[in-house]
Image 1 (spheres, rainbow, N blue to C red):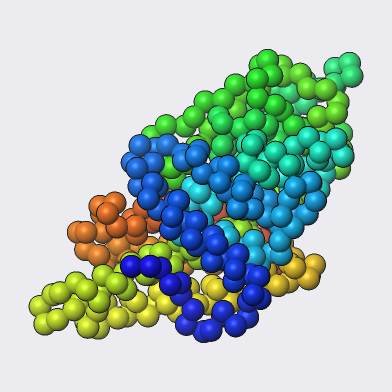
Image 2: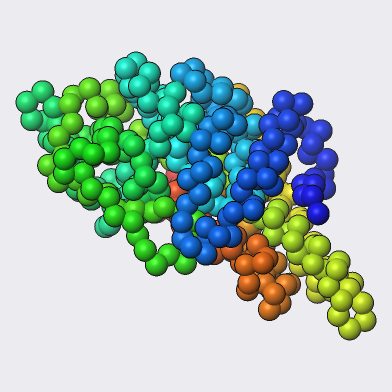
Length: 386
């Protein structure tokens, strides 16, 4: 059956015609291109690289950036794209998030004109792939402790260090590497193939299996001075990138939740148990109502955050709330849907458990649930607890 979406509170009326068209185009892309192949890639722990160029052609990469071949869409339209991509799989949305928010955004915001002209058109079209190197083996929630260093040597820089849990790492043509210098934390563009720059994929993942996750090793990697992002100064620069990515996640998680709710509802209506359909039972209805209510609240939260972002009024703490809440309810919905499906819920003929395990990762990356809780706690009390 064709997926019709979820709109219990007539949120459709709050979207512009352009936003609805973009969402519908992304929805069709997921139906035609993502869903037919994603189970195979999840089983085999491979990423569907064939989708990259197609996502570029659809305008999904760096969708809310302007100029240099970027689509220049509004932030709500961008969020709706992320929602639909994650309805397919978190791995697909993660790719688009990293490419747009963590690679293209810092080049667009902090890069030189030459860097923008070289990289942004290729990244927007999917002709090039990027990754974002901030997290290290010993520093995740505390990026300020990073050990990766960049030292001046002649007219250029030499980078040494290790980055871990890097989406797209081994397939990236360019890595945005954050390193400590004598002047503070700075950003550098490191191209694939530079001597001393190596990648290794992380194996054995039980979550985000259709996503490439890597370690990056930098051993005396030399880059010219023009590879430094001139506008990036201090830790605030990579944190600005993370705010962009977290915004997309707040929308994306809703897509995963919607997929689980849609599957659970149809199953409850069709599955026959003693006395009639499963959906005629009180406990089944309780689960479905919980799912519907939380998704609806999440939709309204994401939409308001998106409108504020479009208006230039968004605070990063608002994004923390949206990411924290929407991922949390999506994971709970995925677990409830899996439970409602009974034994059928543990096989990949059904989507709920695939989304459930993926969301365990989404709850952790781009700021854990607890870190966002503490960010909000500090914003309302004025007292730092981290």
